[in-house]
Image (tube, rainbow, N blue to C red; front, side, top):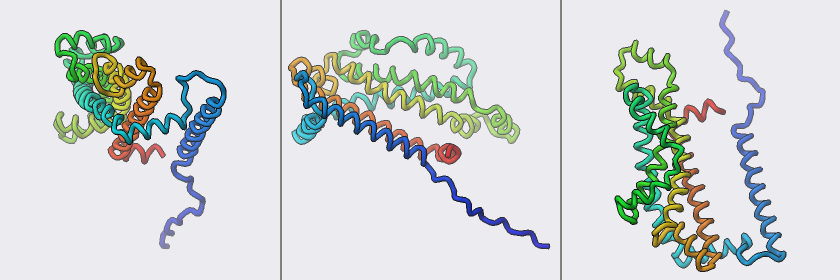
Length: 269
């Protein structure tokens, strides 16, 4: 008797991304409601330094049209991106190696975990004495801040690699270098990307902190200059630019994460 072929179920499948889409719509709605309340509140008597969202949007468009804002954005990115790339790359590589090599773990982990709580901005005067007050000292401070989250997340990502996968690879004749490349690194990628997101946010925080000290360009410099000259319109423009850059950078990193971790996105649905 021939076996019956399995029939497809007619039951409706749950729509993909439903809860995520609902949460996104709710988040956008709350943000728009907040802007609406802000706009409504500015109709009443308020201090001069509080501008309405519509006024801020007009100043942003004007600053973009004049090219003044783009010049400061470019100066900030020239400092932030090299620091983020350098600090994250070194942190990820050393974290992965320390997670699998006991000798390197004993050498690096105590130093990293001991100095991690220290705010990295306090090292700026020392770095400036060594490297001057130019962009290299700011890039070094940003790289230093980005190093720690990437190291720690990569370290624990490597440590949490399933032992059964390592043993299986060894029994199949894989070399340690192959296990590191094909087992440890893929297993660590979710935590590595979590560390990269934290480092990306820290790169912007440290960027604007360093630009407020001995800088002649950049969004942090623009905020400090606007505050001292009572140009509150430019101050809001710089704040909006910081928020837009941070959000766009984070979304770009999430896009790269989804492309690389396709297997995790599929299993999490």
